[in-house]
Structure formats: structure tokens, C-alpha cells
Amino acid sequence: MVSFGWKAATEQYSLEDLLEHTVLAEKAGIDSVWASDHFLPWADTGAHCAFAWVWLASAAEKTKNMIVGTGVTAPILRYHPAIVAQAFATLGRMYPGRVRLGLATGEPMNEMPLGYDWPSPKERIDRLEEAVMIIRMLWEQDWVTHRGKYYHLREAKLYTKPKRPVPIYMAAFTPEVANLVGKYADGYYTFLGKPIDFFRDTLFPAVKNGASQAGKDFNKMGSAIEMLFSFDEDKDKALASARFWKATLSPAITKHAVYDPREIEENGRKVSDETMERTWVITTDPQDITKRAGECFRAGFKQVVFMSSSPNQHKAIGMLGKEVVPHLRQEFAR
Image 1 (cartoon, one colour):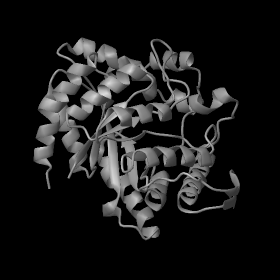
Image 2 (spheres, one colour):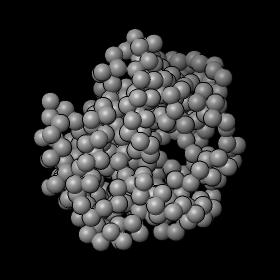
Image 3 (cartoon, one colour):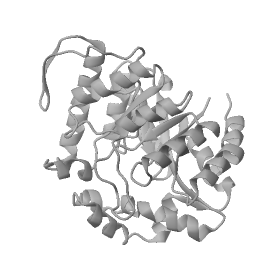
Image 4 (cartoon, one colour):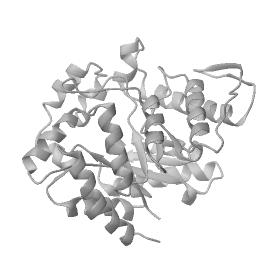
């Protein structure tokens, strides 16, 4: 059975608006919420950037059955893995069966403003691998001592542990990291930034290979993909609202470790509208959203996470609830 997620973009919307959108999303038939976890946002003008972990508790309290989690947290520098483990163990204790932890290797604007140097890709991957092992050890064991390459524990113990296991999803955009997802995670998380064949033919096999190496059943793992869209009856308005995210499509951001939101925003202005429309669904027609989400399910994803930058989020959520989610549930029911 397929499911649906809602992306709580902490960079674009206020805490109050995010809670309102999330409550409406649950009423529209959406099953979970993924909150972005950043220290600084992807833009400076009109931006927000609240602490996702605190917000998640409010989201869980305001909703009835929604699964809440980060999409995604980087446990590499500003967060010691043991603190991540403690935070999500506490959330898991408060909301049993309704909490999920998303992990990834992060971005410069989350770590460099706090005085850290931006590590190489290999170091970030190595840190993520060690971090996820530490998180699991603390959830499953007592009095953990660990002396790793990047992190140390000395007789560490979590006295408040989750009542039920907290699933870990890991984000991957390369086969190397996808292999780690298979080894260490319960699910795979990504966003629709490349042709769908890339995920089906390249990344899913890498996840499956990692799962096989760890003696896990790939078919029992979760998988979620962000589908980026902006909807309005006026396409120009839909496009204008989505331009907030242009910087995420600029290769200069990661290549040159840009971390200042003012500079990030300036780089975003160099991204053309045509480039954006190749990645985003900028539309006046709900069928365009249904079609793109259907492609994700047919490629093997079990959850589509709607990342909306629509000028009227209430209207967009209502559209999903009436015209997109029911159709897809019926089409992919199994």
C-alpha cells in the first residue's frame, strides 16, 4: 500500500503556518510529515529557519495519527550522534509508533556558521556511517563505550528510550551512500531531482546490495521521494512562489561550500526558470501532479512526499486531498 508525506519547509514558512499546513494535510489524507532540519535557510529574503526537533513535538501533538520526523538531519558536526539519539528516543517515547528519524550528510550552511570547516564528501559519508551506528547502539544497549574515528562515547546510556523502535531513513543521491542506506537504515529518502530511471536503475540496486550485505530484506525497507511542485490557477504566480528554492538547483552551492544565505540567494538568481521547471512541477493542472507522483510509485517508491511551494498552501492542500491523493490510493492499492 502506498502512502503520502508532506514536507514542512522550515526555511520558507513560519512555525505557525507549518503547523496549520500539517493539520490540513492530515485532514487531506496525508500520512506523515517530514521537517527540514537546518541552521540557516536556502535564502535570505523572506526566510525562516526554526529548530525542527522542537517543532516536531508540536506537530505530533496537533495531529492525530501522523508520523513525524526530519527530512533530514545531519549528525556529522553540529549534532553529536548521541544527542540525536537522545532527542529522537524522547520523541519516540512521547509518541510511540509515530516518530521517524531522517539522516544525511548535510550542507555547508548548517555547519560552517558554527565554526566548522566543511569536510570532504568522503569524510561526511564516513561520519554518517559512524553516527548511525552510534545512534542504534544507544537505542539498543546500555553503558556504551565507543572510540571511533570521529566520535567517542564513555559509558553512555540513554535512560529514556523509545517505547517502539524509531525507524531510520537515510538520504542518498549516489550509489555509495545508497549502499550504506541498505546496510544501516530502515528506509531510503531522496528527492526527485533526476530522471526517475536513475532511482530505479541505479540507486535502488545499490540500496538492495547494501541490504543483502547486512542480511536484510530489501522489500521490507521503506522508501520515500520528495516531489517538488507549485500549484495555482495562475501559472506565473506558481512559478514566482517556487523561485524561493532556485538556489537548491545551483551547482555552485555545494561545489564551493557557500553557506551565507545572502550569497546562496544570489547564486539562485542565476538559475533560469526553464531549469527550475525541469525539476519542479509548476502547474495549473492537478493531473500533472498526479502523473508525476504516479511515476514515482511505478519506479518502486512506497511514499511520495509532497514538497509544495504554492502561493496558496491551503488551496494546494485541498487540491491534493480532493484530486490527487484519492486517485493515487485507488490506482496503487494492493
